[in-house]
Image 1 (cartoon, protein in one colour):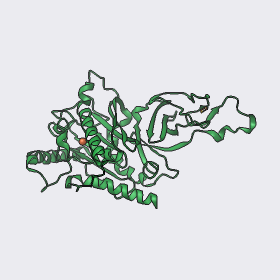
Image 2: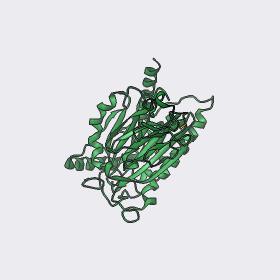
Image 3: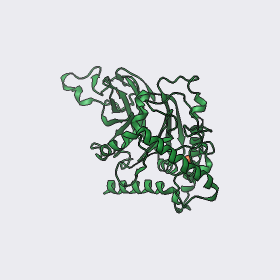
Length: 380
Ligand code: FES
Ligand SMILES: [Fe+2]
């Protein structure tokens, strides 16, 4: 928790989860609880959810709207920027309210994604990747989206197993719904295609070429940029094709919401996917966006929060059906949660010994390599 979650920029929420001034969400990373609250200027304050009197949690709901923040224990009252504005029966001039503001964490909004950093001095490397990733993300205009649905799964596994599971598709035979639209050849390349996936691979290659032609026409970036273990702000970003109609995560690959995001010119834009170390991944499609965040609870449990965003003017029941919109990834997440739990159980046995990574699991290896480097640095 100190070496990784205490030292890096962490994904917390998207701006759609706190659209108006006063809107807040609370997020926990292990023992840390943070309040993210939208201020009057549209910025997001990140405050430690720990009262400066005797330490009570200040906000206890996962989300809501608040004016001032009032601790439920002895009613110390804080402004949305954390300043202590009222403490009843305070001992006169000896008590300096300015010394008892809620502690702040660093926060940043990147293309509508809210990140926090618990370190005193956040790593500067995060700034360096923003100009690279923003051109991929900005066309989806997350500031003009709304939350269609949010799913929390308490996974029975260490957060590293959650991340490792996300970083490979070697297990994608276990995702029948997802495999309709997400090519299960993901992570493979020419010469590594097993016989049962050869036909899919050919289809994938054709779809990739078509997508790239379309992106060139619209001026959308698609090239894979992979720096998962070569920098502190490890990331991978790309725009990749989807199977079938190539529009969305449905059985046929057709759109799941009738409203295009932002000013996107076409539904057939595949998925713009971002993987970020240490705790998040994202799929941005023409019709919706899905954000994924892993919040460690303890060494054996992780909260995985999945949020579906649609255009803010999309109407449920008219432009999208909520069950259809969320079906593929709800099922996929449950399947993944099961894989993680199985792995946690098995890997906890004294008999466990690491097996080899397959070629298509190279991103798992990159995650482990990134983790090892960061921990060595931290311990040094
Ligand atoms: S602990 Fe918050 S007011 Fe006392
Ligand atoms: Fe999976």
